[in-house]
Image (cartoon, rainbow, N blue to C red; front, side, top):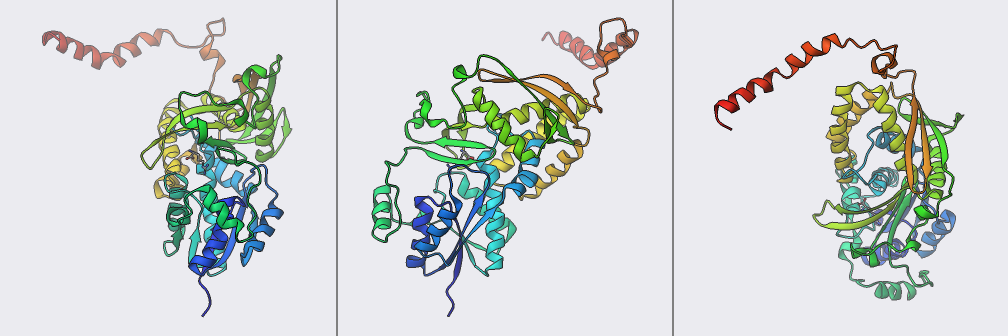
Length: 403
Ligand code: ARG
């Protein structure tokens, strides 16, 4: 009888490498490994492909997901100005659903009944993989070996691997848990678990220390077309390349570090460090353009929608009906978000210092206190009388009650 097949979300690191063999030995699976390129650094994808095959994978697919990640995931995240708990631009929460989508596709293509991930049992990522995969195909089975295997310590895991000729890291393993993609970099664990301790400087890779940034500020003009970044300093550029550039520019000026205590979905608080210069600069610029181009009530309502959107996505509900309905609302707000925003980077800051749009709702003659003022001040008195009427009436009632 043919062996059951499993598709493994494979990163090339120790855990998922060991998992390739473990699934073969302990579960009797034929393993298809799948690695996704979402713009992460430090990876020789051909090397990790060969490594999976050498360990025993039937096949290892390396899929370039960068374009799709930007067009289908980051475009929506930016339109939503997505920041979980008003701070975290959802770096890992955005990559899990695209990886899950491809896992499900590969499972269908290879007629596999199982998908497997290498997430731990106390994080958010396990939820995101599993909820995404089973929303896309409710008949799939999901396995999470890290929740069940008995290779409890890293030493045990390395011994198990070494005994089978699986390459193990030779350098002293770094004490942090790191995830990254084009939208930013996440750092957890080790000394960072003490929330009072300042993060050591050597954990950062994308950003310079703010005080080490250049003495001169740098100005950059970001162009948007219907909410999507489309140029830098007037030069047409892909959204992907704009992120690459802003990661570099922001990072050089020490911009984009986040140090926060975050509420995980599984109920605990954790201390998280992020470096996301490009994402934060783009959200800053995108918001600034929305301030100019979205009607007041729409803008206010959208702020509350953004909060729900970010929470849904953080909770692994990328493919949920609520999240999709919110996407439709948010998309309907974006056609006028076209124009340019001037950003100023300096010593850890990124400020909006200018914005312009053909669809601007900012009307100089209404706003000015100068000669060209066209605002009808005489109408203000009647407006205020009626606008304040309900609370004025209530105030008289309160006085009667002696309150
Ligand atoms: N706390 C962040 C989140 O839940 C980062 C997770 C990083 N994942 C990882 N496997 N290191 O999105």
